[in-house]
Length: 196
Image (tube, rainbow, N blue to C red; front, side, top):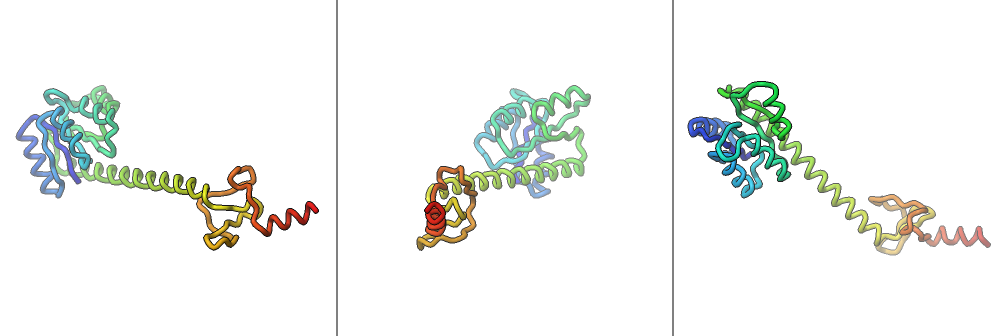
């Protein structure tokens, strides 16, 4: 998992890089929010951001807002701050921050927060993939519906050998469906027999 670190303090940035690398993460450093945003726009494989609250050019809160406005997903944002107080934290959550680590940070807590971020990103990635698969299946079923002859009387479908039989279809057919106004030979014969 790739993690973007944005902190203008070179010592803190290096400590974070060392820790995260030791824990097996690939780390991409940035010295301010503007540089972090440029890196993120160039590298879509980044999934977690560890941002300082106060940085030159673009601070951590504004960086978060711009990431959320750009709809970069999945992307988990952890804000590093020495700031306390309910109002500031609520503003950060409103901007789209997912989690906090207080400075000076405890490395065990930092590692736990990063792991939670990884789980969140993995779950979001899985859901995005499953949604794309479901949308593809719905589109495929809609296209298939145009080419499959289905009897509106019994629900049998005509197969590739021109035989009418029960086939498990990825869609349902009802009598009100314009595409289902077709009768198999058996249903057609029954209808003709009852109308005669």
